[in-house]
Image (tube, rainbow, N blue to C red; front, top):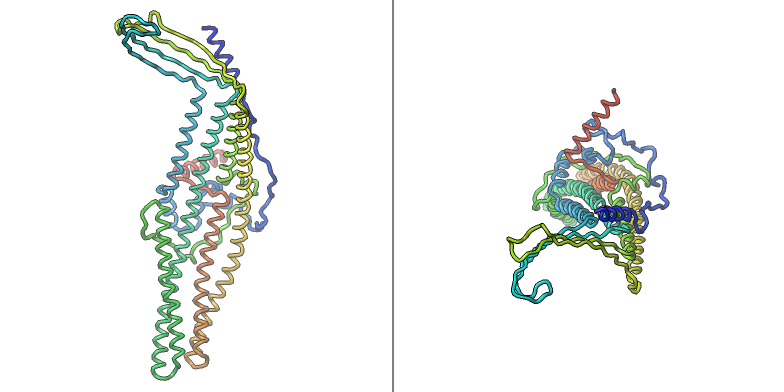
Length: 488
């Protein structure tokens, strides 16, 4: 028994070794701020409030800042039913099982075997016909001397964390997709109304021009031009109606249900389009974006796999043990004189024609690939934020110009109609002003949707964040407890 204890102690000490290098992070230069950041409008975390609770952006139901109950309802429904989110949740569950499986590789394995035979050739001896009942229980244990199994467990643990951040990334993207499609739907509905209103107005004008032509007041060219302008507005109606249905179908799929009508709330012009999200430094972005964190855990996992490949080149030590009983009949089975056997084996790879070393080289190469992929993800994350910052800034400028253009165009359309009715100007001038007003109204709705969508995309690019009802309640309780402690 003492020898067995000694063996186990030695085995435990040997397991303190680990082949390969521990992951110590990836370093590369990052800018200290965003080039397109407006320092005068930088928002601190404690300036954002929602439901009287101050939360960091990572734990903020950001889309609630639009104060559109319909959008809030759609996001909640997508969280509960979106199929891609459910698939990602299953990926996390599978990764947890995989980690448990890998951790079990470091433990002894037990098995049992029972055999019943009859014949004249038993236990390698020829004799009279007889029976043999044999029952054994065995244990086998490969001692993790060089940390091969621990490295693989480390890789499985990194894969689990990566899958969790992958799930988080999908949830953030889900918010972005629902909100972006919702704002597009609002845009399409508004443009549909504009097209119908213009078509109705132009149809009325066409009838007036036709009546004037019938009385010989205006030439036929005026009638033709009026019909063309009506056709342009009327032709836009089915285009926007098609967009409405297609966007409703897209949102329905995001909500995890069959395509159908989608309720909408506030119009685009009523949405809060002056939101400012807190901007951290690009370096801090590394700890916020799920795709960046997921990519780094990919490096950690691959680094551990490389260590396991190195351990495969070293000797492996295995211990085995068997205990059992044997008898010619059930009545004679007894534990009085059991069968037993203890053993150990040391297997050392000697000459594999470089196969094991080449496998290490492959895994090291894959580690470099994982590092490069991680760095590319970081570069892309910073560039995405920069792109959206300039897009939001310039779109706001465009909207200000488009609003003035719309105001002037509608005024010019009204004046041109008055001038035409009084015979001061030609019908072509009125048609041109009518076209300008129509285009100006449509353009303004396009820009409003673009701005809101860019804000949603910036939320996603900054790492997003969302809370379930339970997490939000827990956060509120934690905040209340912290305030109580401060008061004490």
